[in-house]
Image 1 (spheres, rainbow, N blue to C red):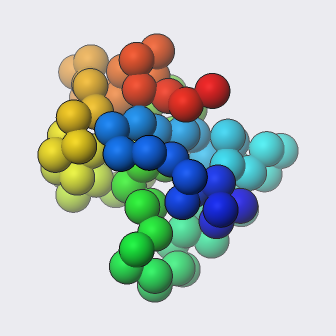
Image 2 (cartoon, rainbow, N blue to C red):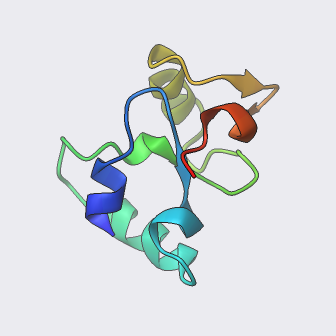
Length: 81
């Protein structure tokens, strides 16, 4: 699962379900407890494009050029299939 997180390129996102099919909450638990500063946790968002870590996560995504529609990531434009 962590390799899937690491493989998300700058400027794109995946959902928790994308990195842990069938167990998206497990992905959230693993990312919450991981302390690797090189792990791009901010590129993993909820399936509807909403953010689990709020303003901090949004700032990191915006710095990478991830498009938003209101408060949510524009999943049609930014999601890696």
